[in-house]
Image (cartoon, rainbow, N blue to C red):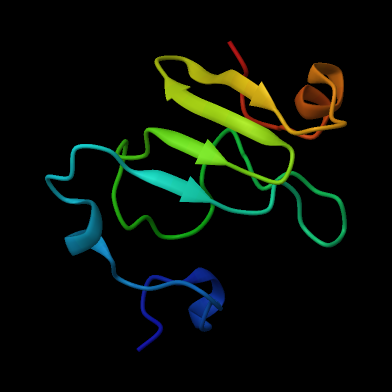
Length: 96
């Protein structure tokens, strides 16, 4: 079923995992920071259907570690060889 997905099409990697995030003490997402075209995957607003809203605590990417805080993201650590300026430039979401 593709109801609720952009254009009514299937989205690779999407799934209903609410049972994995509901009532959990800490949710950590591990992902690539950018798409294969260099576009940020850390957006100001999600464009795909959400599994859970406001449940992610930390995001670990190939560029660094960020905590989800009120108002945006907080840089915890940059990956080896990545500067804070590079991490900020690769991030669409607000870094506070």
